[in-house]
Image 1 (tube, protein in one colour):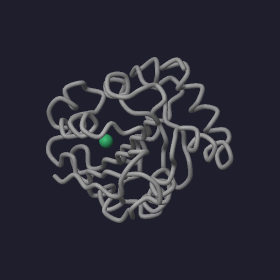
Image 2 (cartoon, protein in one colour; image 1 turned 45 degrees about the horizontal axis):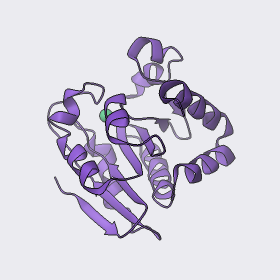
Image 3 (cartoon, rainbow, N blue to C red; image 1 turned 45 degrees about the vertical axis):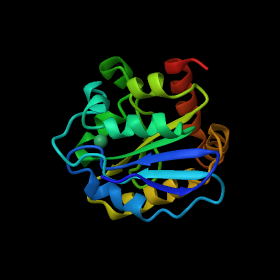
Image 4 (cartoon, rainbow, N blue to C red; image 1 turned 90 degrees about the vertical axis):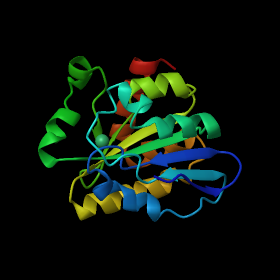
Length: 193
Ligand SMILES: [Zn+2]
């Protein structure tokens, strides 16, 4: 597993993929192909762990298999953090379930285009390692779906040029107003402001 650093200075963004199981197959390439951002720093970890699947909602994930993420966050203090995950088609109903918060303790994902889903990251890492002003996003890509992967690559490219949380919110409000509203509402409900 390698940690790559592109560019320098603020803002610092950390993008991670291949977090567990075989998700690297649908996500890691996206990070290998990202170019140095115009402003600031981009750090990537294209393959965090390709071993046994442990959910990021399980706190032990970031203490064991995903420890490299925490170490990198502590070292570089990113203000923008992105996780790229992939899901099997049949699981979309659970990921976008309106009652997901009640059922799993985390808000539902919003659907963007090409079956790419947008959500936040696990409460454990969000609450313990990032300031409230940080932008923490998780994209879920549909497994073995080239269009889904290409669209997620486009989103990664946009986020890596964002300089702040507000930059991204502005983009989302313009392009996906409904999803933006939902994401902001979820965020406020979950983390306060
Ligand atoms: Zn995942």
